[in-house]
Image (cartoon, rainbow, N blue to C red; front, side, top):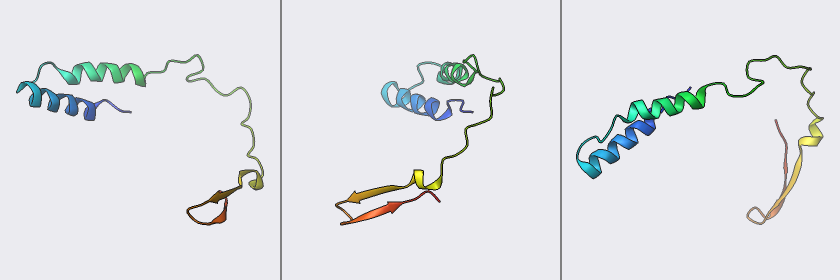
Length: 80
């Protein structure tokens, strides 16, 4: 869970550079925004799935043949 610390440091830095001192309590403002973002918001948050998950497709369905001019050859990309 993020609490906005990097954003707070960035805003405080800009205040000091532009004004020579902090203009407001950035941590309190940004923390309250991140608190809202990190809270559950949907109807299904915290509920159990209604059905079992869909099984994965066969491996061959995850294969792509890519032609890249940079490599001058066709490349077979497979998920490992």
